[in-house]
Structure formats: C-alpha cells, structure tokens
Amino acid sequence: MKNLKDKIIGLFAIIGVMTLLMGNNNLQNNNEKYKISPIPLNSGNTNVYLLDTRTGKVWKEYRGKWEEQIESLN
Image (cartoon, rainbow, N blue to C red; front, side, top):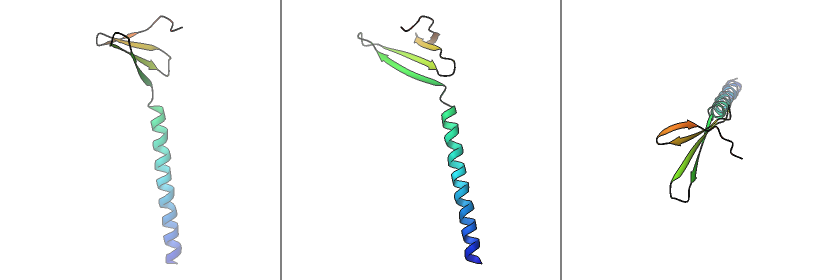
C-alpha cells in the first residue's frame, strides 16, 4: 500500500512541476511588446529604433527622447 501511495504522490509532483513550467512559458511570450534595433551609421553614430509589436509603430531615439516615426521605411 505504501508503494502505491508513493507513486501517486510522485505523479502529482510531476504534474505540478509541468504546470509551473508551462505557465511560465506563456508569460514570457506576452511580455515581448517592444523590439529594440540599434543601427550603426557610417559616421560612427548609432540610430536606435523601437518597434511596438502590437501596434506596428516605430519610434526613434533623438537627443535622449523617443519620437514616433511617421515616414515610410520603403
């Protein structure tokens, strides 16, 4: 009887660990709202762009502030 009890407790422990791992995986995917892309220029400076993956808006860092880019990137 003790052997069966140990197997049942072990099974619930494995199910609990799997539940925690699967729950953490979903949280990581939802947090990726912004993507940052540094683009080096020939002058030695770097332009930094920020993409909002939910709305598609692109922002550029200019003099320490973020400005929304309106022009097309084509």
